[in-house]
Length: 247
Image (cartoon, rainbow, N blue to C red; front, side, top):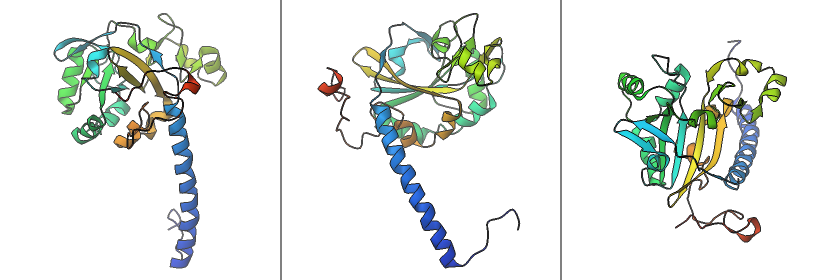
């Protein structure tokens, strides 16, 4: 049993469990504070007219919201020359159940998957996996390059996980500047009328932290929406005049 936990009395287990509970509560409080800071991040208006290919033809950024106020995009690694999608992204997408999507929709939030592979390749792989979530092709647009999930210095300056190429080289990740590569990530967007804003993106190991609908909602500008009180700064005068997104 050398690779298993120690065997102790019930009292010893309870003491250890209480100590761990204190650490768990501290982590929960720290996570709540981090989620609040995430909701207070400024946002950037999307001015480019991105065009995506979907099952039923061309769509634009505003269409991806499907009438909802928020949009979560999973950047699925799928190079146009590949026959199959990335195994890790595939494992994550296996967990995008209809129940998860329904819970997000109940919070006025849509989730879509976007890849650079042609829509015909995407549709074939989607059918092979038995998936039903919305999946679009960004092939032919600069979307993947603008959100730094396709890296190719011949197309755009390389930036990954908010590090420039010199910073990546310093961190021992110079290989990201070699040739073209697909990288995973998630990006969050907020809609106000016909205007779309980019509020948040996450890459690298951060994408491994996701789970159920609350984990996804915690990455959005409006959060879990369990109450409608805006955090100070989202629409208050201390951060300058901003529209009231509660509608």
